[in-house]
Length: 302
Image (cartoon, rainbow, N blue to C red; front, side, top):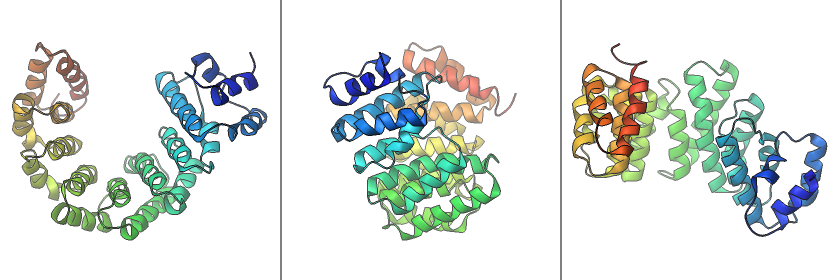
C-alpha cells in the first residue's frame, strides 16, 4: 500500500478514514508533499477539513506521529474552514518559523474565524515568553502583534478577546491592563469571562479581590473562569470559596475548575479537600481530584 493510494482513499473516497491510511501521512518528505498537493484540491473542502481533524487526533493520541508539514501546507488552502483547522493543528509547535506564520495569519487572513484561531494558538507562544522559553526578539514582536490586534479589533469581539487573553501573559502590559478593565466593567458575560482569563494569566495581584468575588457570580461560566484564574494566580485566600464550589455548585465545569485550582494552590486545607473528593463515590470527580493532588505536590505547602 503506497502513499498515493492512501491519499486517494482519504481524500476522494466517502466514508470513515482508517488509521492505517492516516499513518502514511506522518513525516512526509517534500517529494511526498508534492504527491499530496497533486490530489489535495480534487477533494471537497469538507473532506480536507475532516482529514486535518483526524490527523490532529492521531497526533494527540500518539506523539510518534508528526503531521506538521501537512498542517503548514493547509495554511495556504483557499477555503477558510481548512485553514482554521490547520492553524489549530499547530497548537503544540514552538518553532520561530511557525510563530511568524501564525502572526501573519492573525494580522492578515481574510477570514475572521481563522484569525481568532490563530490568536488562540499564539497564546501558547505568549505563555512560553512568560516562562522564559521564547527569545526576547520573538517575544517582543509577538507582544506588538497582539497589542495591535487588541487595539484595532471591534470592541468585545471574539478576535479582540482571544488576542487579549494571549497578550495578558506579558507582565504588566499597559494595553492588556486597560482592556481587561474595559471588558470586565463594560462588557457582557462573554467579555467578562475573557477578562477573568486575562486576569489570571497576568499574575497581577490587583485583580485578586475581583477574581475571588466572581467565584460567587450567578453565571456558571464566570464562576468557572474565576476558579481557573484563582488557580493560575495561586490565590491562597480563595481556597474557602473554591471548596464551597466543589461542595455546592451544580455546574460540572465550575466544579472541575475549582478542583484544578485547589491543586494549583496546594495549601494543607486545599489538599485535605482534594483527598476528600478523591475518596468520594463520584468517579469523575475522583479522577479530577487525584490529578489535582499530583499537581499539589509541586505547589503550595509541601
